[in-house]
Image (cartoon, rainbow, N blue to C red; front, side, top):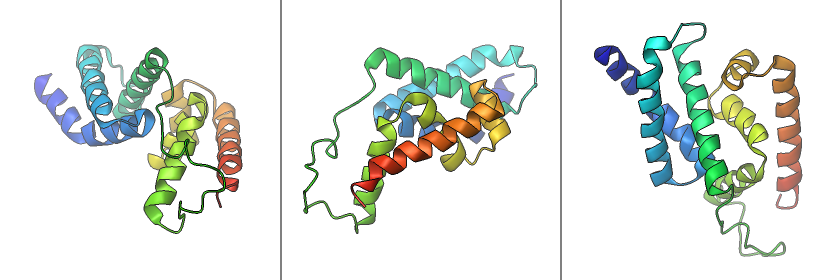
Length: 161
C-alpha cells in the first residue's frame, strides 16, 4: 500500500495544492491542507472501492477539507482589491496581473458552492458528471450552480471592466 500511496501523492499533490491555494488564498494554509488531505487519503485508501476515479475521490476529500477549514477560520481574508475605491484610476486592468488578482478576489467572494463548481470546471477541467461525483450532487444542480456562479462573477466584474 505504501508504494501505491507514494505514487498517488506524486501524481496528484501539485494539482491538489493548486486547488487548495485557489480556495484558501494562502500558501502556508494550502500546504498544511494538502498534507491533511493526503493523510486522510492514506487512512481511507484501504476502503476505496473504486466506484469513481481515484483523483475524483481525492479531490472530494480536498474540497471537504478546504470547506471545513474555511468554515472554522471564517471565509474572507482582507484583500487589497476590497479596499480599493470604485473610482480609483490607479488600478490598471490592462495589466494582466492586476486583472488576475481582481478575478481571484471576486471568485473568493462567491459562496463556497459556486466557487467549487467554478474551480472544478474551469481550473481543473472537470466535466459536469465529474463535478457531480466530487460534490455529491446531481448534474442538473452542477449546471445551475455553474450558470449562477458565472452570472454572479460577471456582475462583480462588470463595474471594473
